[in-house]
Image 1 (spheres, helix red, strand yellow):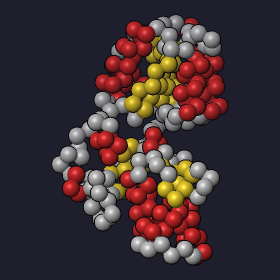
Image 2 (image 1 turned 90 degrees about the vertical axis):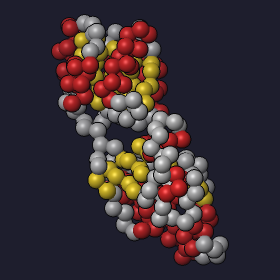
Image 3 (image 1 turned 180 degrees about the vertical axis):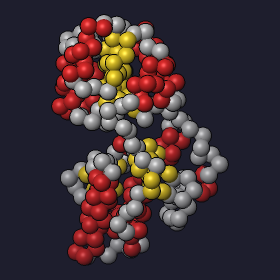
Image 4 (image 1 turned 30 degrees about the vertical axis):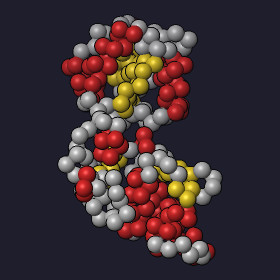
Length: 251
C-alpha cells in the first residue's frame, strides 16, 4: 500500500503519518510533501491510491491540487485533512473520498479508508514457495504457462531490463535466433500485458525501445521486494523454496 501525505506543517504531517501507519499497516509506503508542487510531482511519478491533502497549502490550494490530481490520476482517492470546516462543501463538490478535520484521529481516518470512492485492489506477487500472482486476493490466470514463467523471470530481475535474446534463451535453453522465436517472445510479452491490463495494471511491464523489458516495481506488492527492503521477514524460512517450480530461480 502507498499513500501521499501533503501538509506544510511538519508536526501535523508527522502526526498524520503515525495515524496512517496504524490504520494502513506498517508496510505502508508513505510519500511526504510540504507544498502543492511537491505533491503533484510525487503523484505524477508514482502510482499512489490514496492522497491525504491539506487544503491550506503554499503556492496552490489543496482544492486546486485535488483537481489536478483528478486530471492526472482519476482513480486516486483524495482525502482532505483540514482545520477549516468551511471548505467541506467545496470538497464534496469534487467528489473526493473523504474529509477529515484536524487533529486527525485513528477512528476518523479508518472511517475514511473504509469508504473510499475507488476501492483498492492490489496486484500481489508471491515468490517464496511456488511463484503465484494474485489480484484482489484472487489468482491471476495467464494465457499460457510460459507467460507466467517470463513474468516470474522479470520479477526476479527486480526492475532491470531483460532483452528478448535473454528471454529466448530462458524459454528454449539455447540461443538459436529465428523469426518464429522472436515473434513468440513478443507474443508472450503482449499476452502478459493483456492479462495485467484486465487487472487494471497496464503499466507493470515497461520497455526501453531496444526490445528489452522490465517490471515497474512500485506497481506491485511483492514478498521478495519487501524481504529485500527489510520490510518483512516472511522470506527467511522459505529462501530455499524461492520460486520453487523454476530451476533457474536462485536467491
